[in-house]
Length: 377
Image (cartoon, rainbow, N blue to C red; front, side, top):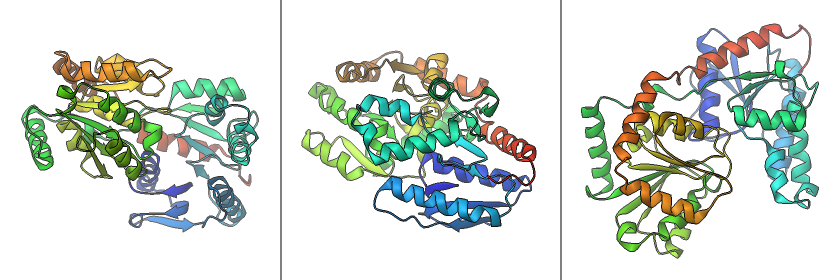
């Protein structure tokens, strides 16, 4: 179950990949969604739509959840697996950070809004004590925050390792160099141009605007040698307008969603990921194993992999835009860049980073089998 599916969101990719994995293990799998924006599901997966109703996002999400729960008794599922928080789930795939913890930063008035009340209630329905939902946890950092707020029972929390694709791992150097040259040539980049990469569907959440502002603050001689390539959907027009207003419209390339992310990881010189909040940050780990140095904020769940691999820099919270701009500049010209690249590629070869889908599928099978017969979700 997912409220909205579109092709290039990280949560959406995990949703479809896990459904395909379960179908491949012999299960009948229905895809339940409020909306489906993209090509039809692969053969063997049945799509059931529950069109949203309401003016606001939280109203529409609530209407989807209600429709699903009303239809559930007649669908005879062994387990209802949700990728968004809602009541009545058997299993929740925790791809989002703790909403109430983030909302606490916004002040008491925000907590009086209908949006807060609805989303906090949905989170309570999953993580509250005695809720019954089994939870697949991707981030130890977020798990600690959920437990601190809700007292979630340990036996309902199931850690899942990363689930990045093996196609993100750095290929042999001759192939990596050829793909790098081809991608940069297609962008019209000279050899002395630094390519900084930003990836994410929710651009404000991922801090894309922070990187644009940092680029604008750099000395002109360095700024003119940088191109910032932004890959992802959503808010692209706003980012392009911000770049033009700050005088770096020629340096910021807003590409929208692309299917050649593995080549972009090889072509770039740095991934900038100064997220405002990030449950995991799959792009971080994909960059590390591709040998692309990373600059990220420590509130990203996967930022620890940067430190463990020795593959870049992690900036502490709260975010300091001056420190971020300076670190961005320092990393691009640093003699450590080749070492960061080698370290990340080695980390991708020696560390188990690719088994998350199989682990999650096996967990869902196990948890579905343990559900008492006749218990309605």
